[in-house]
Image (tube, rainbow, N blue to C red; front, side):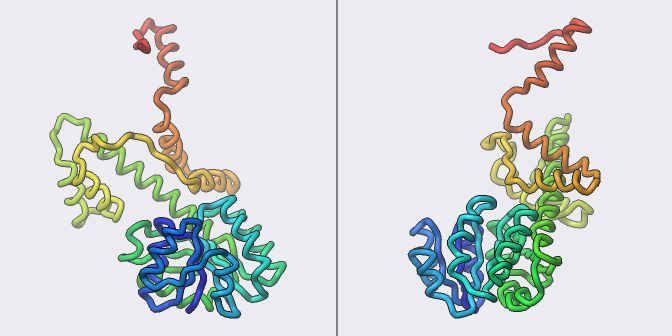
Length: 299
């Protein structure tokens, strides 16, 4: 297939390369000319603008967006939609809010353009291992896109989740589960680190990868990190979030669903970004007030 691909960051560039390796023709565009040049070296068609990208595509156009969620998606759609025709397809492969994807699909539908929301998992390892794809949208365009999904995903690694919005909803839940798993691993390893035993944490993580009920790719990655830095001395305990955990927590509230593990793991990430907390100071002050317990002073 011949498609346009917009966004050549860490994920987009590797996905483009995998599609090229699978025999597809890919016209690429990115704000960075360096990214375009790198893809051109491995066989992509370089374009200089969105208009140029559209001109390099066949009559029935397919464009895959791999840009940050929110405003960047809308900015791209504002440019692309007026240049596209009835029956053309736009895929948002990023981590967008599922409710926003529903609105974008409704807006595109006014002009007869299909909008597909495709949650994409695989990170920087996707080029080699394939990408797990969770997509939502009408069945007609989904069937057209099957060759792309087949190339990008490993065997049994893609699923049509339902109408538009369902793909990004599924990816949101996927990432919320990831939050909880990461938090559980982090706490378990800290407990071993703080114990009286001089544990070989790298060795334990790699042993758990054989036969243990908690083996996973995340555990394998933990082993890789410990192999590179056994005490993680080079890493600051500052953990960012990209939004999916917040959206999942809000969705849980909307649908009256208890998700205590997700809530705790998300709030732990918030806590990691604070040098000191007012709540912690208040706790110390209260203990001093009612029990005369000593406090530590800031210097």
